[in-house]
Length: 254
Image 1 (tube, rainbow, N blue to C red):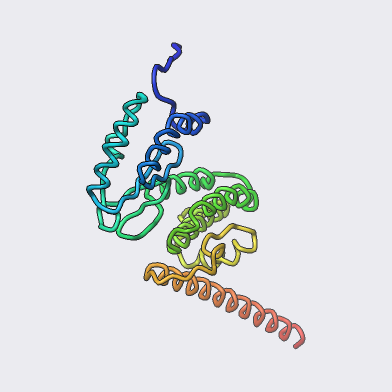
Image 2 (cartoon, helix red, strand yellow; image 1 turned 90 degrees about the vertical axis):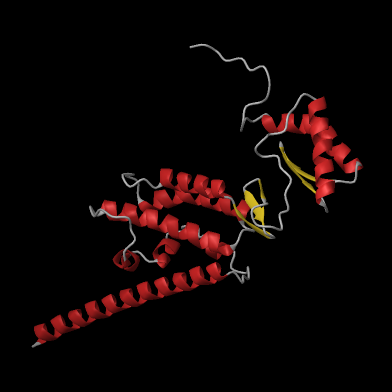
């Protein structure tokens, strides 16, 4: 096996990458500030906020000249000038998508989270449900801590996906194939069942956030309706079981 010796650049997601970015880009950040420009930087990602397109073009020219002077280059696909107040002209800055005066979680971040959840909730996993939930909670809690300012419907969607994956595991443990989507599964394992086991719920972790988004109101209504139906079904089953026990006792007395 031959050893690869890099001649330029730094490996992506390496531990030293943020340090190298701070060392190389500090002078650029100071120069942009002295020029009266507002530059927001996170490691090697940066956004320059301008009032007009002419000012943005001039800032891009200044930044390109500055990075060329220290032997760096701007990414050709990620570098562009746009108006984030318009649809199709937004930008992504670590994990978020800013477009049309709105902010939401980028598709890449959502796909990455779902991939992590799938890896932790494989149906053939032989651990108990308590161990599976304990392994899920750090990932869910850490993701929520960073994206807690996203629209609330994002959290209800992720919560539903997590519970569906765990219900599929419970079905598998009962030797019943399926994806945990049917009403019977929601009745057998309602949302309160997972809450009692300590599963972290993003939607309930931020209950004070008010929203006017119609998707959030729709998801909240569905969540309450599903939970109510499950609770009513459980109560009906318990009532029927109690009636049957009383009938059996009455027949024995006779």
